[in-house]
Image (cartoon, rainbow, N blue to C red; front, side, top):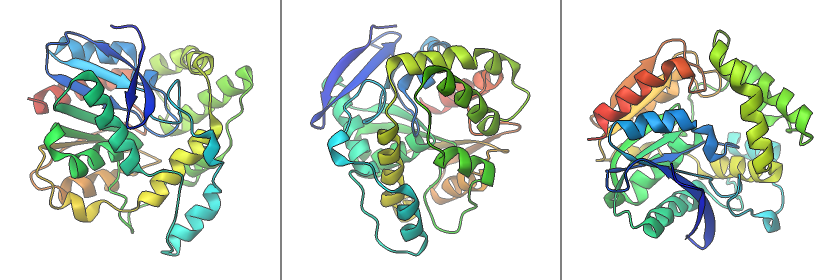
Length: 294
């Protein structure tokens, strides 16, 4: 595991670290909304590196230790959602296209011509966008618990939507308590190993630094980016879709839709998995990625 470093990418700075042999095939991990790079757990990254990859993870723009866009203000997410649901145009400080270009800029900074790209949730949408905009830079695509953004797909459960739209407290103890409650909703019950580690994980995230306005801007980027379904239908990248069958935030029908849209895509549905990467399911997820990313 390398020490965290900073790379200039697409006109901003991204904080990243790596696991494994730099001479091995690069595997780039992109995390989701409001999630710092350490949400890709160290041990999960070690498991991937042990399968023969140079694993790269990083903080997206507006989160963690990467560049913040505080000069862009705080979007009214509820108003943007309302406009989107009416089919009206939505503008945002940046879009998923910009975040995909950030990722490719990081690859440029690291001297990586092409990589296996794995994204979770919003990170899956960013990975899809890289496959659309930068096909030559992507060896394989793995889209985890992500949607195409197409209209008409099932929405989040009310409980998951409340988690998404409720402001996050910044005081440390309140943040840790909210984190624990959030993952009870998104991950679901019955994952004692993860629940035992949640307070420590939350503390690490709080120590690295929170940026609630950045979360709103990332959410605005998702809303403003709209559907990728048409472009995904012409995608040629070897694609793997991984989704949990009890995901309350991005229902499994969304993953099935991505797999059906991309020609030749492989679909792995994991029973009992919600909108999370629970520790007991790491071996199956790592196996699926390693079998695909060749």
